[in-house]
Length: 522
Image (cartoon, rainbow, N blue to C red; front, top):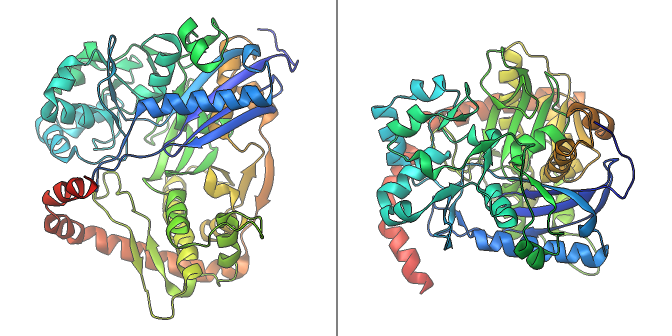
């Protein structure tokens, strides 16, 4: 394959994240040429239900592309390939002649608890694990499809296919149904032997294989921008579109996860510590974009930097034109004045629940409040709580005998110098900020370049383009304090987890709460 260097070669990467849609155009040297982003709204019918409208995704994409074209006229016509990544697990029911039949039930949605219980009792978790799947959980696609079949049978019957988020955008661009093996691998319906659907699991779940899209390699070209999509977006008709990959796969790839023992903190809306391992390592994980490697999740958080975003939105300083600074930088400045340890305040960051084997209905906890507690103290405690949970994940990697030299950080949380220092201090490892700000879109774009022969291997452009922008080292003077508070955090987390408190709260809040919420909106 021939490698190109000219700026005339444009790679377009689209990252449909849980909270933001991001688009970036790169040249063949990995430099960003233009881009844009927009916040993706969440439909919250009641606690535990989180949906998104796929029509909004398409509308936002059109808007961002239009703005990019205004900024750089002719840029979209020069795009040689389009690659999309997106948040996993959430199915959108689609019919060829009618489009979306309902909203996307996102990965955050927890309404499939009864379906998970049925899967565990009737099929057994071992059957899913043996096929190379994650644990059975409401987060994953199988439970959501079963919920739709059980509670919305007409939608299930009428749907021709259920598309994952990135696959909706790929379909809108090409009129082709598809998915890829990274997204399929976290549905609880995957076979790691064939890198496709497990017919056995699909059948035992009582689902229809015909309603699942074909599973492709992420770099497979599955179609071209249609004339209609070209009119709506400004993209050149005929531009190749690849299958793309799950956002976590592109994030990890774009962060440099192209060989074993690379540890990455996904410090975005959702949080997670991931490490690359070889296929023969006894550590659970999902397929990497690099064949022969796995992206192993040592620990995940359903909510990470989004907790700080929520707190700053609701209780933080407002933007002011005089200071010319965002509310996040103003909040960070206040947090810097709070001493490490946050006056003993501990935050359990389960603001969007948790994944099994933790209790799925976990709740966020702020422990240790007093009448002297100030707003910035809580903000710092949120940063520290997420950091303690990250340290638990890093410890699992170390306990498995995998060396951890440093941690590469990506996502919104990695952009805060205050938070980077807290994570370095709490975890006790150098914490590195990378030289690309939108790693998901970057990883997707480079994947697209490989798909059309611009790069000879997947590893080569990442090795050349990804560098450490800033390395934050642990401060020795805070080691003893954070070691002690980490032990207290683990003790508190385990005590609450082992109790029935979460269940008691849920039992007290019966289904009438949802009805009341709906009536209040009318």
